[in-house]
Amino acid sequence: MPAPPRKRRRPDVSVLRVGHRPGRDPRLTTHLALAARALGASRLFLHPPDPELAERIAAVARRWGGAFEVRGVSSWKPVLDDYRGGVVHLTMYGEPLTKVLPRIRHAPRLLVVVGGAKVPPALYGAADCNVAVGSQPHSEVAALAVLLDRLLGGAASSRFRGAEQRIVPQRRGKRVLAVRKRKAG
Amino acid sequence: MPAPPRKRRRPDVSVLRVGHRPGRDPRLTTHLALAARALGASRLFLHPPDPELAERIAAVARRWGGAFEVRGVSSWKPVLDDYRGGVVHLTMYGEPLTKVLPRIRHAPRLLVVVGGAKVPPALYGAADCNVAVGSQPHSEVAALAVLLDRLLGGAASSRFRGAEQRIVPQRRGKRVLAVRKRKAG
Image (cartoon, rainbow over all chains, first blue to last red; front, top):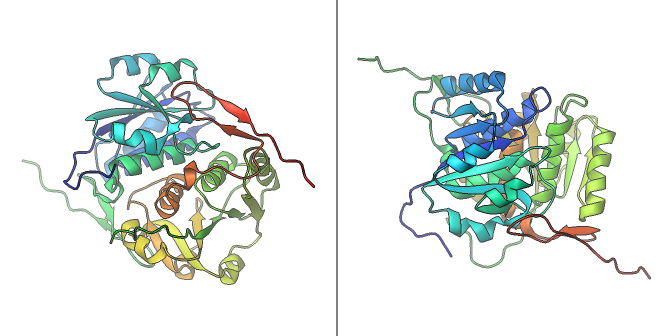
């Protein structure tokens, strides 16, 4: 079914990364967080917590704008249990994204769960749906990016509020502008 | 402009990863390679070469099918110079993907160049176009995934030839089938 032509409201998307290994996965989880922010998610719940990584992403958000944040959680199950909205688990073993997308695109709130090296089996049952971006060995960063792009399409090109600087797209080379802040009060 | 309704031929896509750091980036570049394969690219040129990584990806292709391969290259410039097709450089500083997509989607062959930690400035001039998936700090894995999904959309769900096993999509849990091979001769 094609999407209705009128402008639709985008879901508020949170991402939950389960099984992060601080010290071993910092770069991968950093990529996951940056992709989540750039493609329109509102926050990343990170299990287990990694304050250093959270601070690095907070620094990006201060400079480049928006309200994206990383919140450490010591247990993943309560995040699912307390979440008021649909829970989508990304796994190569799940149903094809094209099949699931019509069911989730009009949800007001979605929690996208992304496993790490080892996925707790209970996750499959705890999620409302298990979704595969291609039934092939994959990258969770890539799978999340495709899901967010299809779900929130175009969010990637929107500007973020409160940025200190922004990129002016160029055919060649780099151009970054400092953004003048409005005075408070 | 919407794409024409008739089935279009997909470009043959190669990916060139510039500035891989063997020993430091193995997991990130592995994710890049897996995403490239799962989302329909034909090969990854890897600069500099990393035989261990190439063999890991070859093992995936043997088990899960298809002809995707990683080819090490000791110098990136000749790959661009010798390539017969359009060269697209992924960078957060480039033109928006939505603007560039109509120009590249009908190309028969495309080389997508993905920088690592440090991008040689000459790359911006050597590419036919510099493309941004969101003008925000990002993940090159995520940016490549979105580009490939928009360009080759649906490739992710296609089966790969010659696989030893394949996933049967499930609402819950995992199901993997061994694929019976046809006898040769």
